Image (cartoon, rainbow, N blue to C red; front, side):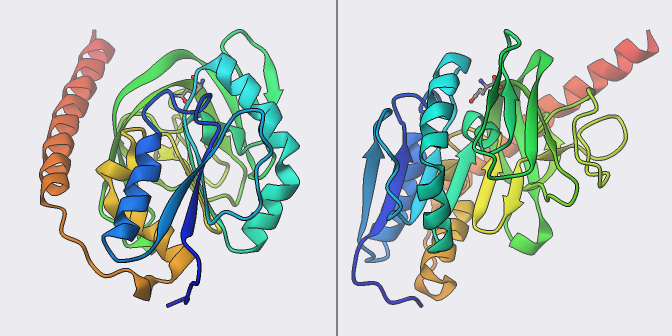
Length: 272
Ligand code: GLN
């Protein structure tokens, strides 16, 4: 265990811009899972227009509409050096949807405007024809040892990962990084016609995903993965989450049912 003399500091980045989908819930879950284990934790709100400090342990970037995303991208780029320093010091990033898209080189909004992202990860996002909306189930990369991830998605962008970049996992139900538009990485982990659809990105102490929910209340194991990266796995005594376990079962069941009927509908349409 990494011994700490200070509280774990959980940064909620621009919640006024990147908080459309209840993303504060991710910060609350991290904080509560620390407190339940007797580990001090505090949430640090970083208001839009404020420079990001380099001293936080976790940086949470949430989802947002296109206009908010344009504003957030400028603020993030202005703080790129601080983010680099924080990552160098062992900080962790969880970026969801708009936040995930902004980790990349560029994002194309629905109106065709292309804005620069942080350029932290080798990925780019283009506008798709239709929005991807609905339940999303992701089988996480086996190296993570996590159970199936559940959430919902609501985005217009399709994200292409650079070659050699790993996704967070493969899509069981839903769209994730994109579908049917050739999006996907050149390693064949594509979300296009030729290969498995994938979601998000997995890099050193960085997770990006299209999973809303918010994602951490629905997937406490993912919350513990992030905390383990900060605190060391030994710091994480196991916690009982019966209510969440029941919610997960119900959501996975519903999403699989919906996913199956959507597939049947597509087959029927394809057959005429
Ligand atoms: N504006 C982005 C898109 O539509 C992100 C949406 C979101 O964060 N849910 O792709």
